Image (cartoon, rainbow, N blue to C red):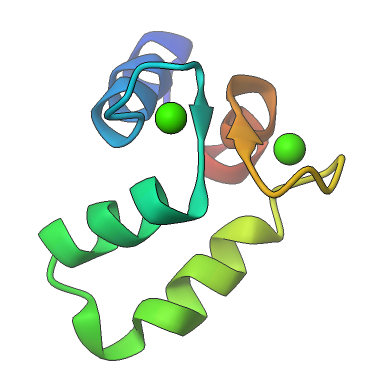
Length: 67
Ligand SMILES: [Ca+2]
Ligand SMILES: [Ca+2]
């Protein structure tokens, strides 16, 4: 994934546009993608990208995740 593609995806998930993806935004994203069944697991897996443990994914952490 290129940086531009990553940024586009990041902006899609970051619905309140604060430059960070929080748990609610992650959950909504996976719901839109149709992953309700494994929502908790998906969010938990995504939060493993939260390198500085502030419970939100910033763009640097996101890039590591989608690399
Ligand atoms: Ca956000
Ligand atoms: Ca973080």
